[in-house]
Length: 463
Image (tube, rainbow, N blue to C red; front, top):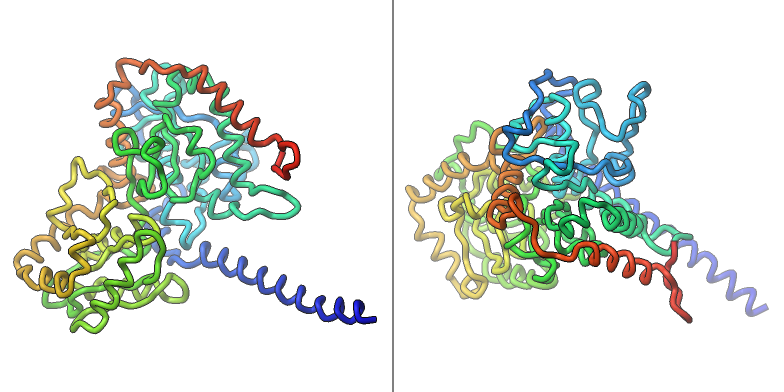
């Protein structure tokens, strides 16, 4: 009788906690999908459902010839729930001229969506849709300067990183495993050991398993915060900007005297890893005159609040969080709020061609947490100096813009140019490095086999 009563008491508790967990994960998914203003994404697509045909790009005139794998749908547009239209022959890729651009989910998904924009640009180069033609898709890998791997890794992590019972591993992890097996079997990978392959892992947690097996490739990342130097580094890899979450500040005439807030920060204050500096700065600055330093998130009207706050501020803080970078820097740039970067480990996009000192202030963490240091530094900047940086922000913001069709020197074209410079620097166009690619490919398969086969007495996932 006692056992029966105990079980009946536990049953409602189990039901309650199961319901609470389900509601939590559902709310987080909705936040990822719906936090950003749909108008911003529509503007980046410019409403082009049937773009005007353009002349197809000439590979011989391109800065970068790109061979793109025809990966199965599950790796790219299938993650957007896109399916080939009736009568399209069941192709892997959308016909941009006939059917327009597949929808990308909104919310926080957008900030790491670079694989989507780069893939669209490659498709446009082949299909005759508008593009500047800096990178052109070629069908013969022997003609290619680089090999592009169209795995939407950031979206895969955001949507499929949770383990769904009865599975014992996530779908994201399974996709990574299948991708590595695919690449290890390809002659293009064996030819160079992967050193000419472009792999996109912009989300800090994207490609968590595969990154350690694909380390010879050219990674496109937001920063190096969660990568050992042996896997990713500035010599071979490319840092790409986040997609900004706030809307562009068009026709901005809000100069120095029209921005009453001296210094602005709104976001998570208590962070782990290098983000401890945020709470130190919070206690130093929260009571300063004309300083807005408060907690905030994208939930509710958080993006609208940030948009108004940045546009009304002279300087915007960009402080290290869980990782060295965040999209806050790019929100500041398009809001024309002079960024103050406090992140000792940050690498900035396109640093080799863009002089950030013309429109940003970079402060060492050790200096920033000294009492009165930051406020005194800002107050020493004259109106004339600030106005010069403000004008420069309006000049450079185009380099951090993702859009379709891509435009001259926007983020997509800047990334292609950076990859081309890396290729020239290391001589990949004229010679292959002495690298035992076949052995490496075999080692990858052996490692993955060992990981997926359960050991005696273990509960390792096999599938």
